Length: 450
Image (cartoon, rainbow, N blue to C red; front, side, top):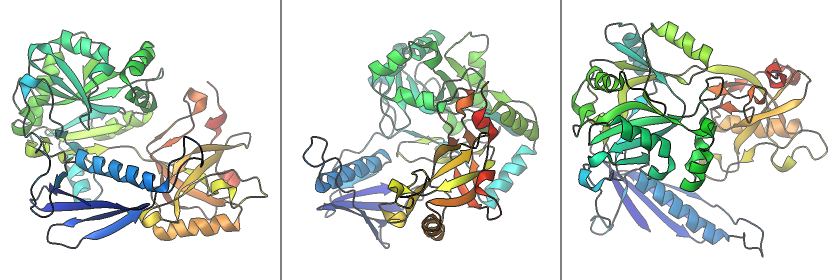
């Protein structure tokens, strides 16, 4: 058994334990001095017996335990001796060692609040109505990277989880060096690739997460070269400005730096100067991901970034448009419910936790204008336990065809517009449309070619 601890933001100590017993991975978690909750899962064997691809159930359980342990350590947990409560590992750094030209592995930048409860929604509404204090920026849809500008203009690039990506983006490195940022500056960036029609292409960006040589080769195609959009500057010339300065101060410094500079692969986040309703309309028309709304005169303090490996929510607000559409829901893993029917295969069984032996996800389809049933994507969010049980009953009663559901999503792709799939991005189940026929779940854009 391995035991890990992590200091929470309120000073409480979180405990996490993991051990493997044969083919089962057991975990316990809780707060020091409180009740521990135990969970388990059984990954099962993989591959065909007798082939090189075969992995036994016991080996798969061990792989799963190692994976879960790495995730916890990446999120700030540290292994201890359960008898003495002493750290087994050397404690991670609590500041940046600039001469080493390396960021500490436990560095973590904050994220904007995604308001869900009434208090946060009211705070956002109050801010957007205050023209003197609000500052609205464009939210881009890419991947987050941390750029370190060290002494002697030595540049390092890291993922949000502090994996080194310096060798992956030579064009960005070259341009950052040419811009001559102040030494000892840290930039939080969103690396984005745009499609020909101006939409951000997250899938293209995800293709650049592999090995460096392959990633660099992909960027031989100019359409696969990302732009580093600078969101904020945790450090500027060695000073932790986001801890101490107002949003208006550090953002003005950042934008002033870029003024009159001609750049191709590095740029500051765009500030929108219209009112909130006009900004929302702009986002929907241009199909951008959303907005981030700041209070110009707020100071983020220790929520801006930390050295605990814990993601904090900074006092600024996300806004993303919600789109809705009607989809045919299919749950038919391995065609178990349609042996003698034409319903396509779709959906997966859950293997652990609350979804064990219940649908982990369902498959979403829509009809095109020729009445062909077109696969969109899988959806596993928004279902209660009871609704997952209902999915099984619906599938049993109608050859895997569960019915029509209202699905909320952040954005979507169309092959007819040059995308590589017809997927819904971040789909969430909102409920069943009992009064709608299957054939009415239609989107004629699925057949349009432009």
